Length: 301
Image (tube, rainbow, N blue to C red; front, side, top):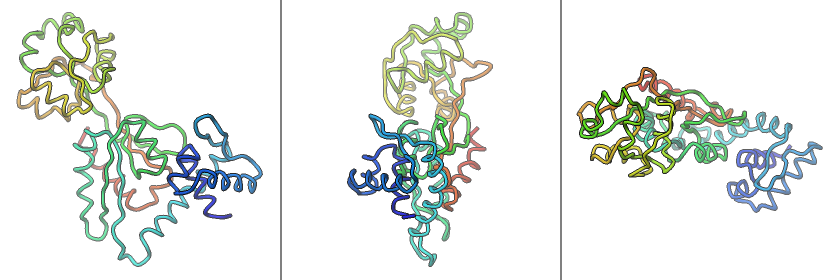
């Protein structure tokens, strides 16, 4: 069987689209379509079902991808690293949420970038869970950190750590609210406090309200900025309340720049997953980064 056809097939399977696969391979869409049709004739069965937006694999298509992809990735590894051991270090392409990746993952992984003969170059991309997993499946990234567990067998996810969420505000807001009224009245005691969030939908605050108060937040976002570090800075400046990961605001809590408004008996948690394309842990640089992050995460929980 022609390896070029298999490479095109695996790229289409990962990209979910002939158009995206063509861009990744540097081919025209008709050329990709022709190669897939040739492979389907050889198998005597369709490998993909065409839809309005892209394609989805048939059962035999999924089976072929899961058998072929790891071996093709291993061949790429051999081709790119060479056999003489003197080639330049491999590059690890990491993707994940900006704050967690910057504050947790990158500092841990940079310890591996300079190791004698076994290190790797590192490139990072920030994005939400959907963008990150799509990019990983399409081959743009080697390793992803996601707050969503992917479905299907194309991607393999390992639980990395849990993130505790804390309801915080500047001390002056805490004084206005009063600890007693919050414990007595619950969420209604916070209705007059402005909210600082990363999105208009108030994802962090809404999740906290549902989990702790069994209600929805009443106040709209007064400041919306797409970075939790900026949210923290606004809260410290007195803009209002926010729900933040404890690791991100721990130093500010210790300094007294912000205070925890409420300490529920069971705090809301969010799980991070370490995700790879199935089979790619056979590549040494991906396997080492995967293992290293798991070790580092033991101290993050």
